[in-house]
Image 1 (tube, rainbow, N blue to C red):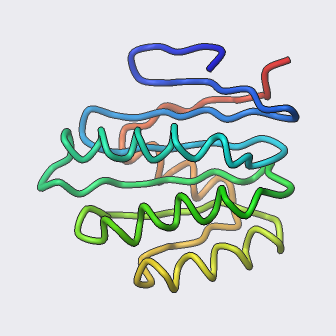
Image 2 (image 1 turned 120 degrees about the horizontal axis):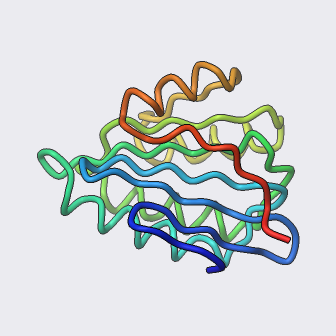
Length: 145
């Protein structure tokens, strides 16, 4: 982790970075720039688990911004997908933003595994609107140097 605040964390990978934002009502959004490293997964799943404690009726809203992600480690997808499989009763809205065909294929596999609750967005403005409705701030994130 290279930076954090009361409701965000910023992580740096060998290439690119990740930002996690959350609300006191159980919405969690993570943004990955460049590459989704397996090393990011524990931070994401920890934040999701913490959000359950804050969420209304124990259901979190998980928002995944992969707009600028070009690829990922298989373990990254496996660990986040496994968390979803282990917590189906805790999933409220699950939304993914991507423009990558590779990421879309991985998302289709993950969606089957978590019971078909994932909604995929291919327009950033629509995803950002949904993020705002859930109380997440609008951010312009660039990977840490």
